Image (tube, rainbow, N blue to C red; front, top):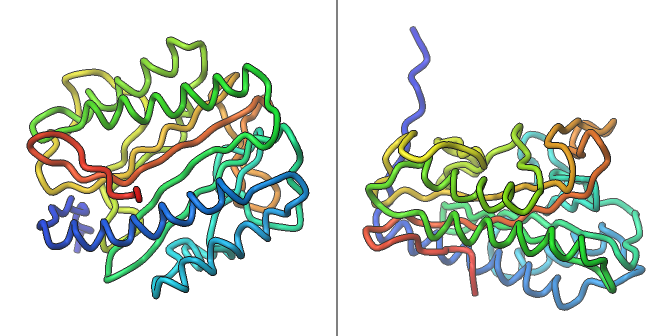
Length: 254
């Protein structure tokens, strides 16, 4: 018997409301960390803070145990793009710290990420953060029922490359719902007028991953953290959104 191709699930308004509650908890985690993070903390301390908030809200950590991942959050620093495992590594002034969190609540997942500059950061690092965040904003602005997914991908790619940065090509956004990662896969590059047509009720995670150098990546010896192959700096921002007739509704916000 052949494996059937996984189908994209359309969510009802009631399901989207549940995802929004999961998203609110995830947003609360990131908002708290943004206020508390400082030089001298370890990535494990940040992870413990995140897990405490998730559990206090009667939710579960989407990432913990997913594919064997050992923590509640992925914390990636400087040249690490995504999937960094929290450890006793100490955060320093000038570090770019990417924090990716998933929350499971009422049967649905949410997935969101930010990259934070700790203490004083250089002008180039700030530009990297600004452009990555702008790419996410522009991707969300291009999202609505009836448009091609390629239009969204092109909006993200154009924002990044016109600023002189690299689009990480081996990693993608994805659908979100009862599973943490659902179809479709959403690369951060593409051509307008191509790809599937977005429909009302789709719930997707857009997550531009950007480097100051080349787009090639490699996996560290721990088997999880993905780093830029040339050692250049990286940033990552992500929101889970719902596709509506009018546009995109951000589900991972306070």
